[in-house]
Amino acid sequence: MPFPAQRMRRLRAGATLRRMVRETQLAPDDFIYPLFVVHGQGVRREIGSMPGVFNLSVDEAVAEAQEVYGLGIPAVILFGLPQHKDPIGLENFAPEGIVQQAIRAIKKAVPELVVITDVCLCEYTDHGHCFVIREGRFDNDATLEILGKVVVSHAQAGADIVAPSGMVDGMIATIRSALDREGFSMTGVMSYAVKYASGFYGPFREAADSAPAFGDRHSYQMDPANAREALREARLDVEEGADVLMVKPGLPYLDVLRRVREAFDLPLAAYNVSGEYSMVKAAALNGWLDERRVVLETLTAFKRAGADLILTYHAKDAACWLREG
Ligand SMILES: [Zn+2]
Image 1 (cartoon, helix red, strand yellow):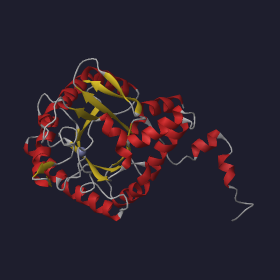
Image 2: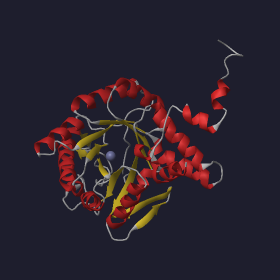
Image 3: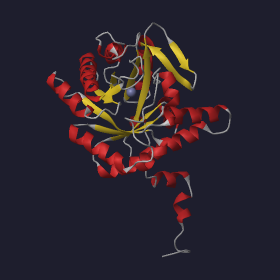
């Protein structure tokens, strides 16, 4: 039944009609808000390349967590900036580490807010890599031992979900068994299963002070040219016991997100990373883009492509805009 009987514009004629036939709904429930926690008191230091995003001391992170939960956002993900860095990152699994302190304070103040913790070495090591380095090489299995200690310390502090991000082979199996062994069988694992070696992480490295001191991450993060490999990565993590899968970065990898969505039943997260955020912010600050429109369009695109959850620095703004309708 072609034209003129068929007219696609009929169902686009008014705002109410468009609402009725809208296929994808975006809501604050979809968002996970990243927080960067630092030592000190009353610290609220804006990250130069990420306007509107701050390094926060624990007291400020608690205030932020309360605001986030009040906006209807169900979860935060914590990144920590330690006092001192060393070759293996001792503060990463210390009971009084910055993330452990933040978990306890946030869970006490906002018990219903889901606290997810990023689990990696790069923010804590003096060389800035996600691995233990022995004799000039990345030592995969020594790194796994550290990751086991980190997740147990996060679980002891009260984390609901741990999120390993280092692309260390075997990390999900190691983490699952470390948690279970210590009695944390209900602590969830969200795997950065498909994480590409991306230029879009630039501003994050300022936020988390985690730039590698030498070399790059190409020998452990994925080649941006590969998509079939993403399915192998995801499959291994499913087999090893992941509860949630993630694809990172977001916007340049929507095709990968879609493929992972079609291949697996697990909840799927997309990380709308720092570079994606900074590009929109820079353009908006110059008056080149309508920020609200572009952000909501972008976040809707993640859901349309198959994401259940979106880690995004835009979460607070987007939650406000969605409320205003
Ligand atoms: Zn890392």
